[in-house]
Length: 91
Image 1 (cartoon, rainbow, N blue to C red):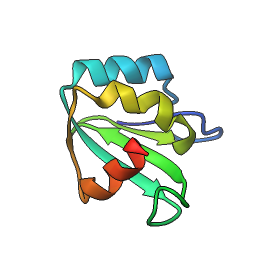
Image 2: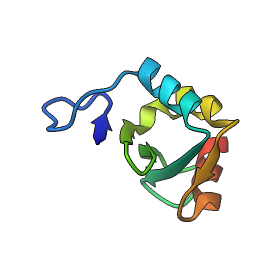
Image 3: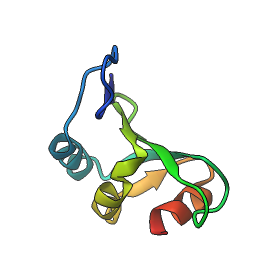
């Protein structure tokens, strides 16, 4: 199932930040992906965050990265080009 945060008129169900925190806490391994406007964290913005398992995926607007980032510290992340994504998370 795909869940969305703060996107109106979506065909996917909405999920709250509290539910995302619980999802992260209950899944020690997650798929992780960022969508950005460019290549450099100093001059680009995160437009979307993708988190998920094989059964559930969550699409989160980039404006929530500062809130969600610390929740991921104890989570093993699986992704394509994590070095790129983590530079944005750290920045």
